[in-house]
Image (cartoon, rainbow, N blue to C red):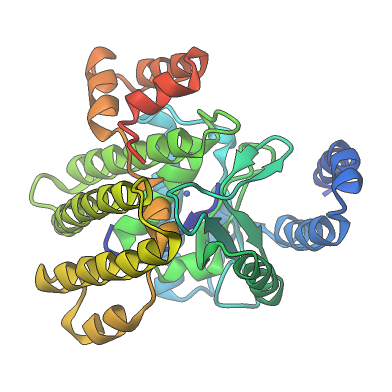
Length: 361
């Protein structure tokens, strides 16, 4: 599933046949929902990505290849092998191929929420189910949808997509914009997106994303510990990022609770809007005070307009870490057993899964 870049420190004939099968499967709901132009643009670009990919092994066998690209592709190949062999992730999760794009961003994700309620606006798609985001490869189309949602009174956000998974339907390639990422983030991307192809419950984005994030973080720790030892520079960088992210998440949860209390109060909508602005300003000031954003970006952060979707979007990827850790321990820290334990959550009622994830918003 689409993974947005973080707003704060906090995945030939046979191929054509598979694309056509997927399109036929999607045709009925698309025509019924009037989304043909949207699907056409997605299908066109996804086909281009799939048909334009090259095997990483073949690229690395060439003599003419700059050192940075060679290092990154070797890293991806190594991370993929580790994901399959050590983390028991689905080998159909991709990263065998590379596709060079003609743009700096992979795509753009539109999300929205109620203005006076911490409740996501959702869309339904075949296979993925109900999700709180809609992805585009065309930025103008994303902006157009955002304006429509804003006109209806929703809080909105457009985010650049860091990566996405087709859940094993295609062997998703690594995309050229991702090669600029720091090594530990690139390794994490491989683990996160391959986790989606391993365990996925249609319609429960918080469970799916939080599970994938947990696997990503555990995988990074294990990968660099085994590869470079406890004093790994990459591991140290990851741990520092994680501490900063955990502090940020604590703040997000704290202020999300304040917003939730406000929205449930008996104040008028106008009074709620005024109080909402004050709470969001307090949040930004505390983020600056705790130095959770670089000093050179503090002014930009303060003037940036935050809204409900920023809270929902961040917490969607990091819920239930303690519960996942308990499951991992129950599985004797064995990844194949852990994945099976997570799948058992599929049988629980939605409210029980929310309790597992400690969702309080």
